[in-house]
Image 1 (cartoon, rainbow, N blue to C red):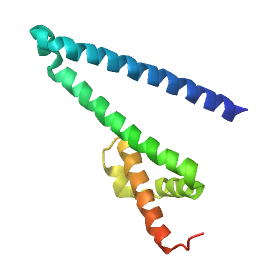
Image 2 (tube, rainbow, N blue to C red; image 1 turned 180 degrees about the horizontal axis):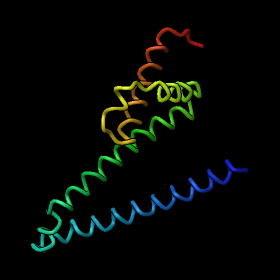
Image 3 (tube, rainbow, N blue to C red; image 1 turned 90 degrees about the vertical axis):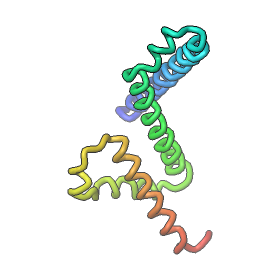
Image 4 (cartoon, rainbow, N blue to C red; image 1 turned 30 degrees about the horizontal axis):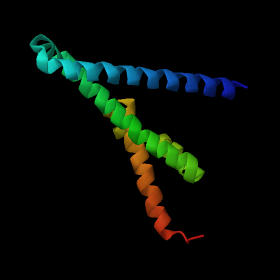
Length: 128
């Protein structure tokens, strides 16, 4: 029953994040349409904190999109690939852990490595 609760919580969070992203998109769209005729708004939108926040959001969304693509591949095509991802994360080297990187960066590198290994292994497999 704990897994059902966790999945319900995850689903609720995904719905909330999706709604938040849609609201952010609407607000940014309105700002982009108003900015050319409003010099003060244009100046405010081009300040460092605003542009930095957009860059961080862009990078996070790109990483999430990449991960979700990989996740759907694992869940829909080959559960064995998910096992390889878990093994890859467990065998992270000491040098990798010394590098100051975010969780999403580590996850992206891990899923890319596992996918490449999976594709390389697939060349040696016999077709069904």
